[in-house]
Length: 237
Ligand code: MN3
Image 1: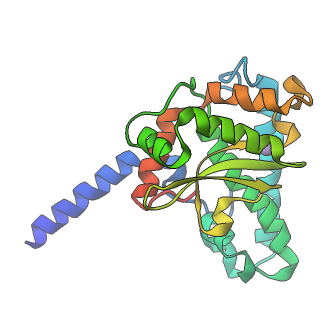
Image 2: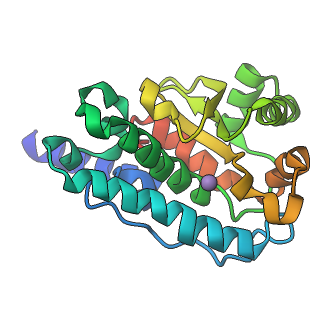
């Protein structure tokens, strides 16, 4: 019996490893590092230009990582925890670094998710995820319309997310600055960055055009993997 149980456990672990991609199998802990873009910077052309991708990843995201490490270097046990746990317990942080960690830890988590779900060719999700979108968000077209409208309503800088609960339930949420659904103990299935740095070179003040075009570079296969990981309790960031 013992052997059989070990075999089953082993198979379960292998299956889970296949479902859960390496970038989000385990949320990172300090020292935090900037992973390279998972595709060339021009992969999202013509919808998102290579220069925007490079500046956004190599400078903006890099700055969040550096600032988060600066906060971690000030000491405390908190930095040994995985990022989703840190962001889920901001109140436990020392007062003098809480805002620094909120802004830069949120920025690191949000952008780590963001790169991963782009680099695709848009279209439509499949299978269980498509059914969940129909059930909870009124279908793909309505989800995209509502998401774009929410993105247009963000005043100043922020994000729009579709969150996923452990039971697979989806919801649309927008957040200011670099706040993350992780701060509410939730998980982001997908999200779009509506800070001007995400689109200004190509779209200037036309944020609605950017929001609409962004769906052309979404990678539904990756998002489907994130959905499966969330339902398996293994989506961290
Ligand atoms: Mn950004």
